[in-house]
Length: 209
Image (cartoon, rainbow, N blue to C red; front, side):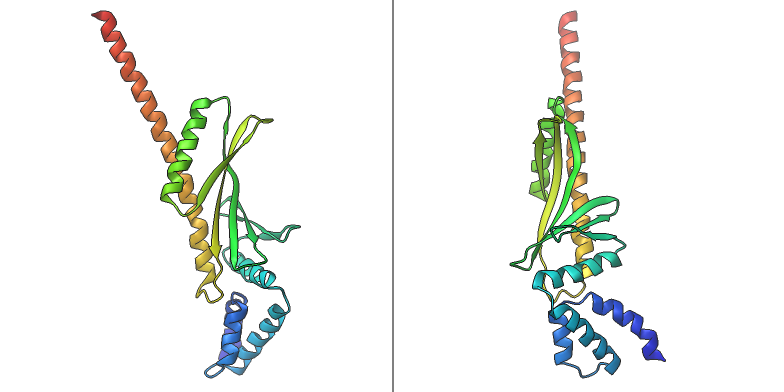
């Protein structure tokens, strides 16, 4: 009875394991229930027939769904999903264990506002010096907009103890970039306004004298 009760937990945990983790369990079966080993073997058979990057994607997809993210695999095999209200894409490298997380176009400014454009460029540089996530921008001349995206390439280690927690931390770091960029821009704008007020005050006093 206890075994049946635990099987749902086992299935969820096994779905987040890499091929290497499954192999390790099967090579060291002592201490595991036969039913558990059968589930591990079934999962192993399912993943082992897939190319490495596809098996990796299957595990990452399950972990994201455990975090409440609805995932969609696009035509190129990348994972599109929403996390805490923002849109993300994970790009898988077929030749390595690296995967790149992208958050496209999360901020935009009008090119006609040259002050705002310069503030944003400076804020991006500041964010890139203080975070592990890289922010970058691109210019759309047709729309006259400047767009900001962020990316972070991480190593998918086959024996990560908790892939769900690992992805949660990495994704949360993207919002730290938001905070740095937005805060820096607000501080720069405030400084500029304070300097203008000071300059106006000095000029008005000189006029009186």
